[in-house]
Length: 270
Length: 309
Image (cartoon, rainbow over all chains, first blue to last red):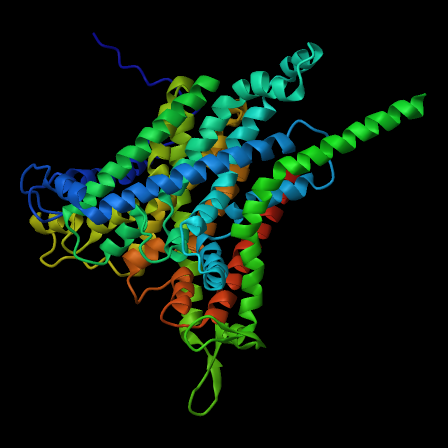
């Protein structure tokens, strides 16, 4: 005979919370999943399924505009993330593991400033200044986009690097110094290897942030400097074919790949 | 002797601080050139006379840019009235950002709570599921929402097939569409900080509540919520600030009619050709954001000092 037992009283349970959470996850993922599914649609529609095909991936692959925009996006993200990671590492070393000194709080505020201002505001401010510089110097190159991306990537790279430094063991560096290592050698052979996971995490964060940027790039770019996001923004106004879904799917895959690597790096750290 | 040692120590300290300034210089210079500096230039631009084809007339100052933020002057008889369109856009931005914050809190708090009640080893995976959409390009997410709610989109195709309605429900190009998009895009920003404070919650206090015959709701309302207030406040700031300055979501989902502040600013630098007004609007947006930050920070420090009830 089965005895019906009451569920044990749980301290943590709140009625309905699990259902709301499930609803949230469904809401977060259903639109993205639909988008991915219709990238494989054989027909022209992004809502009516007409069979499986890779044709939209092929057409995106052969689309010259998409190709150059994709390469440009990767180029910008690589340069901006590299510079941001280097500068952020230097800044993190300068602002951690020390007694407070004059200007330290100012440095924190300054480095994090790009996070405090709405993107559109930074974007138009850059438009004003860069369009003037473009007129004065005649230089129309990629330098503007690279500078803007590096600037807003720095605070994102700075966060994990600083966190890593603050939790690092000082004694190893002291031991190196005691063994007559020069400051540079100590940094090169002790600090840097220990700091490496933080720098890598910062680099990847900066890379994804740069990859995702639409607003600032849209305002800073000169003619013919479309990145994938600004190209897509232009496409959304027209009649949308599953080609945009295909581009999004590849883009999405790339982001998820980077975030997954980031997840495992930061997990290993603990 | 002692003073000599102190002198050397002091010299080392000074040297150390100087090195630290050199080390932080590249980051600070880049941020100054491509983020902070231009904001100051923008203040200057907001005070100049607008150029005929965009840009400004250099060193001709005027308060017209700021005047036009809230007022308009009739071109024929010079009467001054409120710029109704601008006021409406300000109101829409504040209202939609506020509603988005509330909606993300109502959805995000239970989600964060749900994750925090999972066994420790599994929480990371659930959090990872929250962060994936967060790291996905905002344009892709907005596009995904657009595909869902369009008249020919998945949602409408589905409800029409089921025979619930015979005409598609118009959601695109309405305030509702913008709000749905913003809730979708900013939800992770609410869940993460709320989770961070729920994770630190001491469940012995919850137990004490139950021992004193509190109901589940009372425990939630009188114990859990007050203790997680810092996370709720942080989440609300993180959602409200990008929401009030949103540009992509209202541009794609709201269309030309349902502008938010970001789009109004964009318009002044494009077709509007009124850069001083655009600059003044941008500064106004920054002021709203700063005020929101200050209000929250003050509330946060107050709630930290002592419990209100």
